[in-house]
View 1 (spheres, rainbow, N blue to C red):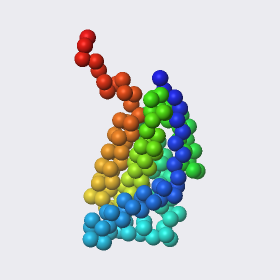
View 2 (tube, rainbow, N blue to C red):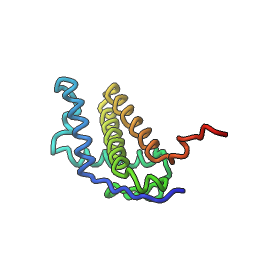
View 3 (cartoon, rainbow, N blue to C red):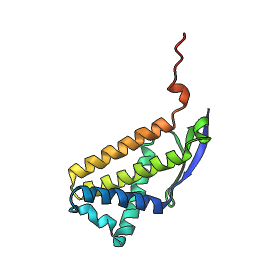
Length: 148
């Protein structure tokens, strides 16, 4: 049985996540990357706009049915298994935040023609999507009895 579960994501948390992921990428490259601009406060509006675009794309690619969406303040209602509605909602929110931030960085990197970075962030978004599917799949589909 599924129940609707609403996840209200904070734009502030999405911005922090995207900046943290960009900063780790910049450090891994020795401090030289066009993604450095994302960490500047002056680019916040552009980053928020990119995060909203990424939010919409992630909703359209959601591995579970989406009942309702509010784009102004990223909020979505997913049909989740009854057991999930009583359980790991923080893990679902965290995974959604990571998926959206990675997708936003992928969009930014592909616009800047940084193909290797774009594919790395695409892999991160895909991994988060798979974690989300795992979190929101009813346990009965994972456990099959050993007896006939």
